[in-house]
Length: 260
Image (cartoon, rainbow, N blue to C red; front, side, top):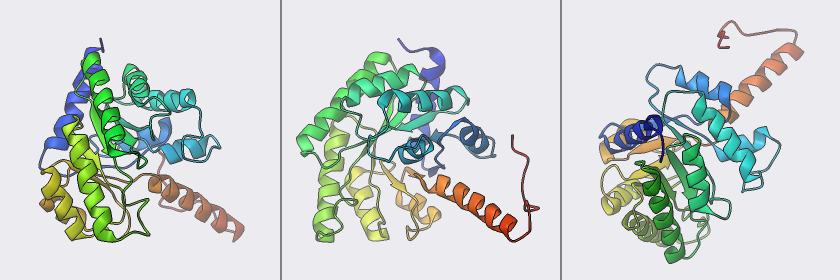
């Protein structure tokens, strides 16, 4: 059975998703980024980004990083903070329920698992197995069941893509997932349709440019917005800008903070 600390964090994370206030999580990829984000007032939870973790080890995204290395990374992050941590575990590395169970053992209390547009019955069965594994560990695990309908449907009719996302999300909720993740550049009407289909505080999104404002997403009943690899891109952009400034003969910007 899981320890009390992990169970309490899981329950806290679930309550944050169920609350009418929008949960925002800026994704992290290592211990120092986790501690930096966690130290900002108002931060209530952390989420990892698989793309960013893989990149930091020199791997492309898409389950190319060894699962043991990914779990080591997310486990280090979970151990470095008192906040609840949700991990991006891609498609589950061939064993979604087993991978989630291992993550729970490391203190992780939520996860993104992609459907990768597998047949909906197969994807829903994976959700059910994950939730059974979490129940066996005694935690209110926050499975953020992800559908790739929009990411993989850019060349399809938008109405058909939205219908797929509705069908898949409902199936994952019926299988026990507390929330459904629909990444993509969604407009306000698409968001409203998904919230109506799933229920309030059941939809999570990624904060890409062009998404409706956070205040409006809260009004619509969205549970959570995360930022995927974009937080690492912002950090690396700042690093590039420092290098460019040094090459111009300048130096460290006066806005730099002493963070570690």
